[in-house]
Image (cartoon, rainbow, N blue to C red; front, side):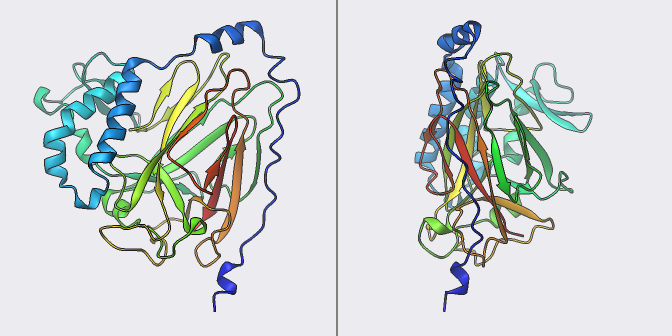
Length: 325
């Protein structure tokens, strides 16, 4: 009875071939940058804190936001502010329609005691991949630009990409959902890696039923142009050209406080998620993938947590996408 359900579109996988002689061709000045690459103690402290937080609150559905933020809010916010380069409290301002973090001491209309109130709106949020580069209210567009390897760049892509831009570099576009829409995302009811999917983590905790998976992206080291628009909390960048990107990963049939979802939520837009390339067509309307050629010289890519079939890669990175609405 499930024969039709297991039929999926078959897309050619990226040729995982290193660009010929690319590492050998790395200029001496870029090699010097790579040798000097380190993780700041502030960035490491934030990452360590979030991993500990996830251990203490493994299911956000059982967490009381008021209590969690009363106990954790100021510490969490301050650690993140320091990880992104501030020497003290920071807060979110919206200028020219774009959210950005600013020094809380310079922010207008922010009471000193309430400088970290922005965490209330970012307690549990996710980002999905819009089909088009627009996010209607109450959703917010978030972009992450990755300056991929310059020498003999081997970026590839195929199939459904939504609003993602993949050429010699990669621009990931997401709609940050409202708290209500975020809470509608839960595990699919069938066990197995074929039924796994991931979304971008854009909150202090992932939704109920999800676990956080990190990818350190070592992008181009020389004259790196990584950038972003909108708040990407809890994600952050590392010198000279690295991203630490968190995903909320839903394993098939994982326990969730709100139970399973039998179909992807209708949130008012056409969208996709990161998903297993073998996710059945009853859930995945179309499949695609993006292969990123990451830094060749002294590459420091790593995974924290297993992406299962949804993503893969060591010195380079493949993400599988699925249109689901």
